[in-house]
Length: 328
Image (cartoon, rainbow, N blue to C red):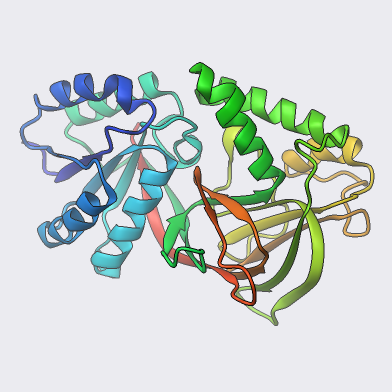
């Protein structure tokens, strides 16, 4: 029997899991020392979290999409003592699997599952690569719910999300191939100022860094606004270039940003060229707390919801950090 106490949380409704969950569960049943919990609803997961914390598992494996991973991490941070947080292993059970691409075993479902079971066969050692990331706590939604996530976006991110649902995922496409198609189509739409994608959102921001005074930005039309605690987004995109002195990266592109066709590729690589300047409409920040004032929708790890609007800000704070194990 392994000396590492491992429990697995699976969401059978996540993208990849809808196809592979039964096979995964059947194979996992051959490891009786590994406890497998299948949670189909948020309420089931919320009821499970205190139980797992009381049992004191060494490693919690989250088998689901980006939203499942973030929700599970929020519950773990809420119920586990800070000094006794478990190691987290992430399996790409969803559709986009952005989080798994940065801190999971692999962004490829097949490759990740093979490595996962090889790891169990070796006794689930805790000597793999450890990556540390924070979680974003998001308050101020129109429905009053507090959410957690590792990627947030609005502006053209919303138009790209709508395009993904209507023209890409509806055709059964998933994974990084579909994300590549979406990214190419969205960039082309922004270059051409296609109204289907070019819809700036009026946003006012206050950012609180780890040290120093808050940074305030007056209301301005934001073509793109993205925030994340991940270092690598889908397709290897790294759109944050401010020094890493706080947990959350935030990058904005204003409506009417100059030299967009010449700037965008270097921005996506996190290596801004001479066109990527605040004067031209491009800024990148780091903060531990962010307040956004705007009326509209946003995408938080694939979940779409509206802000409360009016004078109520959307408040994003960093929680954690959490340690993620990438088994060898």
